[in-house]
Image (cartoon, rainbow, N blue to C red; front, side, top):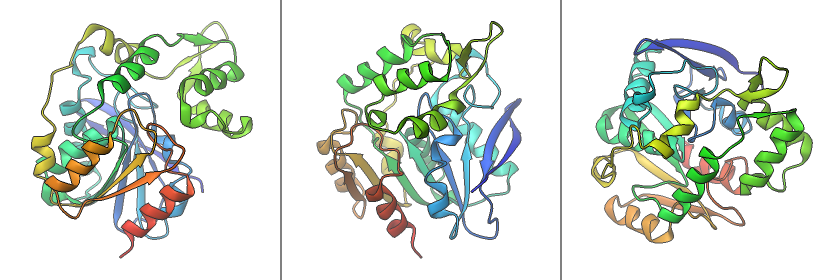
Length: 278
């Protein structure tokens, strides 16, 4: 399936999204993780687009969206961007799928605008994050090379640092990572992501602590939590507490996977399709 590349304006920035078509169906908006981009949902979208109008966004500073002021790379800003994007697209009530950081954005939005979210899928994230897993992510995020000789080198970096991609066939991995980089002036490849985003964990800029249990408890949408069985970000204890705070929340574990399943695994697809069924 070929998605249409489109833009809307929000908070003075041109923000990019992929539109997988079928606008007469209920809207479903996908939000990627910390270092991801809208194409992270390319493999999932075809499984959902028959029954939904699937849209996948590039959070500011990532993918083909504009870069923003360095001090504004923070979850509350991303939530406001999301609200304005939905307004621009005239989408009053949506289903959200959020991976990792995108799940945090989705949680805050769903808690702040409960009347606007029909259903919510959180991909390996909850109101509490395991400190060890967070350190692992910030370490490789901030220490990543600034550029690469070619796509093979980009793929090797991803294979070494993203557990869920370790066994991915080379051709499939190359197709996945090509959206994360762009040509540099010297013929090498560099990240599309704003360098200021990569510096946030190191500098602490925009890193204001938040009690995510507060917006979480306000969510009224039906919720599915997809957890990597070997996740070092979302613990089983946190997933269980999520179900206690919001009874009716469903948790599905994806075997053999660490943090943030791609949502293209058969177990993930089956769970999401069942959850989204009318």
